[in-house]
Image 1 (cartoon, one colour):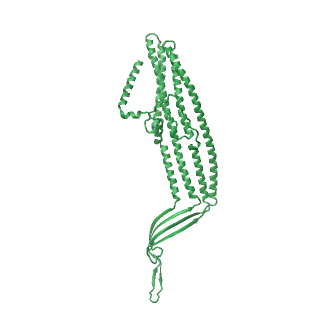
Image 2 (cartoon, one colour; image 1 turned 180 degrees about the vertical axis):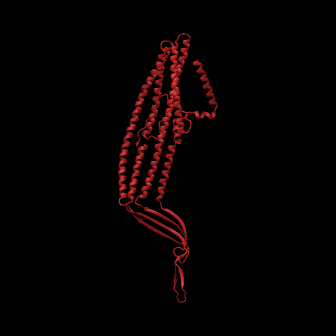
Image 3 (cartoon, rainbow, N blue to C red; image 1 turned 60 degrees about the vertical axis):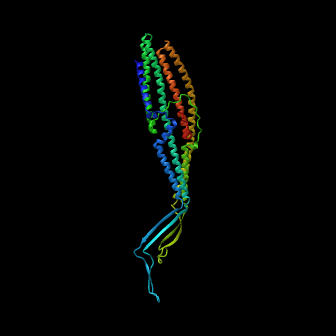
Length: 442
């Protein structure tokens, strides 16, 4: 009965695969996606990365605007004014000349101008503002890089989880198939009176245990694939995990490339410029201006003619706020001291984390060699017990124990390989290695 069910299931699966192969448009979604491509899709689809990218671009534009703000400004304009009443003066009459009234202003005045205004010295405030905006733009860019690293690492974890589920399905299916083969064999012997019914029942119970585990693992795989789809915006077909221990080269620690260290360094620069900005207010500011005018009546309202003329000026100002700027500068000094302590602590913690991850990875490598040796022994034992069982020299319990031991050994070894790959990517992130140079072995 069990054998006929398996044959029917196999026939149904074969028909389904044939139907899928005939649908050309649907097969592309089944192609295995590499981890590198999956990371690329996740980075392009993630909303947090998109928000950080917009923030970085906004900060860059603000930095450019701040630089252009210190350049001389060009002013163009014109004005028209009508005055209902104007002052006038009456000149007394002279011999041969009657009395004359002269207007001292014009009712209609027009002024067209083009001018330049520039502040050559503001106590270094302009330079400090420009540099602060530039550092803030770099900090926003660094935040984008940190967000990308976090998303890439989350993608790696989800990808490896899907591979771990695929691995369990593969190994559990093999264990179930070994149990089913023995069920078929023992059932045939039981019909001939050469085996007991209890042996068939024991093997069937063991196979049902594998079926139960497969149901749970398939649900976990569906969850992992749904998470990958949510992260990338596409259906991701994950390839099987590697069967052998890959050769990996761990990157050295690059503290200055770590986003956390770079952020503290940039924050220190911003505080430096904030202090400089506060100190600049202790100095006077100088501004220059000049313009060319073309107007009616110009500077001679009596003639009332269009006239071209120029103006120039300079202004010097200084203000004192009773030491408030000095206190602001002192507060910046204290903030710089605190930031220096934070940076030293961050560097120390970074070194500890990197050293711990590398030590753990090396220990996992040694464990993998021991687990591989255990797997070889489990395979040898399974082969011996299988032969003995078929010869009637081993019990059903012996077969089930050997089958379970081989299954656990295979799972442990292959899971250890996946854990090594994940640990290598965690070291990549902790070392400051660029994402495009991570170890992304399928």
